[in-house]
Amino acid sequence: MGEKMIYFLFTDTGTWLNRLINYYTKTTLNHVSIAVDPGLKEVYSFGRKQPDNPFRAGFVREDVGNHLLKQADCALYAYPMTESEYERIMEELSIFITNEDSYKYNFLGLFGVVLRVEWKRPHAFFCSQFVATLLNGLERVCLEKPACFTTPADIRKLQGMKLIYHGKLDDYQTQVEKTCHKLVAEQTTVKQSLFFSLSEKVKGFVCR
Image 1 (cartoon, rainbow, N blue to C red):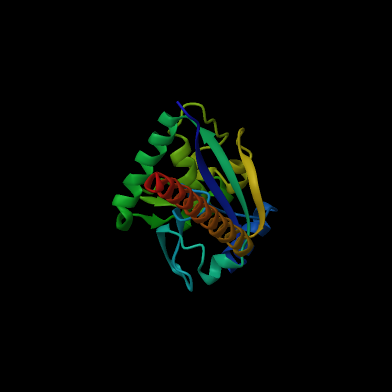
Image 2: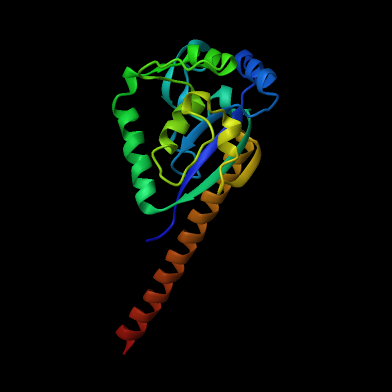
């Protein structure tokens, strides 16, 4: 079986909540999302449902092109896994996607991390708690803390994480678009060359 990849996007949006978390943790990039592709077309996390409303939050499919994330500092990591592990992650993720409106953002859980108090709230998660919950379904993943205490920094330390980009998210998106355009151009050139080659062969056959 071939190796599969899942991606983790860590961002620093500069919002008041983000700055508060940075101050407490003494680290940056304190928002984590899970992505199923390196082009970041499908990115999921717990965060704002509307970029300008911090109080309407829950499970979201994030738009990395919105103004909140576009200018964010970020780090993108690839995490290799077996096909069965990948399928397990996707199955768990599909449950969140199917029941999207049932989930809430776990604001109280953030205070629980600070106070070291485990508040169990069904269907409520903060970003790293959500990602840790998905990862805990894999036998080989061993996070040092319960999901409710896990921070984005803890997830970055996972053995096997491969950093593939660090910088502005908008710059990464620009690089992806350029790469896609280049691939499309190369494929078009190959098709044109193949068509020209076949045309020449057909001409030669007809002339005979």
